View 1 (tube, rainbow, N blue to C red):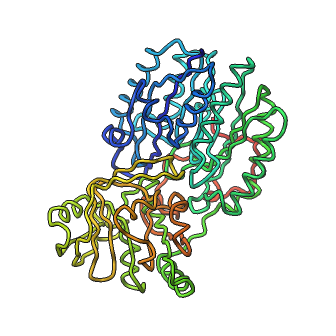
View 2 (view 1 turned 60 degrees about the vertical axis):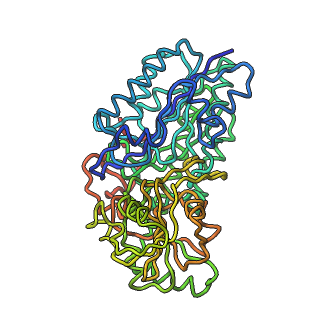
View 3 (view 1 turned 45 degrees about the vertical axis):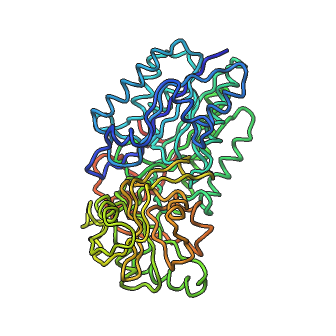
Length: 508
């Protein structure tokens, strides 16, 4: 049997946050080595679950768990944490050798304090350890800021094709099947990269909307050509202020570098022709509340979902922003529900107990100037729990088990109900509120701390989802961000009348 190592190291790093991601953030989410990698991730909806699924089904291949680490999006990974993660990965890899191949799952938008291109950093280390002959195939998050170091270190890379990310398992399967095929046939896949001088606004990154459907249809059509294995369009993560930030196309061919490059160039040209469709359509807080009132008048049976783009927990934001809650209390009609990460309020409510009435300031603790001041109100504690819940359906991020720590449901005197959590958890699963004995239909509006990640869970229970241009660490108004590390030019932040993938705009 051929032994195939499995590695995953994923973090989406928001460089506009001052607080770093530490080792504790990984320990709270996923940090495991050796055989525990397989036992933890086998059967999961994550891409590593897809890796293992293909390897388990092939009698000639044996999965070898090496290293798996993941933390929720937050600030850049601290230098000491990054050094520790790399040291653990290196140790596990060297101990497991010899191997016959590697399956790797970088995120593609990881930034460390001591490694701006952190994914390229660890992938290059792995390649240097195993040498040039070993096959390395892997996956990339749709939000990857793809560097040449990442592509050079791997033989084949496949990006997610959905946002919300519902195809991670299938993406992992594609990478594993590519590796298995190459081992059987003796061929070696080749990968080409085109980095467009284009930043895709987070508001435009839904793959199920017209601009996404059109782009991926062009990529899908090319994939059918003989000799091509995959064509991936990576939207990029605009909150990582690094030279690689931006849109890119990665094409994988069975053996022809020319075919891979031609396919990448063709899709990149098509994308550039569509570039204005990927500029943000921004709706103010006031206009969003007015639009929600109109929708509610037409569909009073279901709540309206207000997507708080500036406090997007899936993009690293703190998740305690109150701008939309204040606006609804002032202008909205009907009950409103929000989930806020506020460990202090959760602890006070837990101590007081169910049925208690408290005068509390809720939310707005991390950065009230950008995300809104705390909400002062008299609150009744309606429910308490340990904050653990499970999701059985494919959801953004491939998560199944969630832990938001001690959690309290607080009902305010002004018609606002807030689920206060100890730990920051993105609204990926409807179970986040159902597990707290909350029914969506009891509310006129639900504030969701995300842009696209909540859609799969909340679209079925909301009459409409409205993306709101709130201020904050993940604001969709990219002109509000203080850039220093990104490359120039990047359309539409910079004037750029024309571009060709055959030109000199690609990042070295």
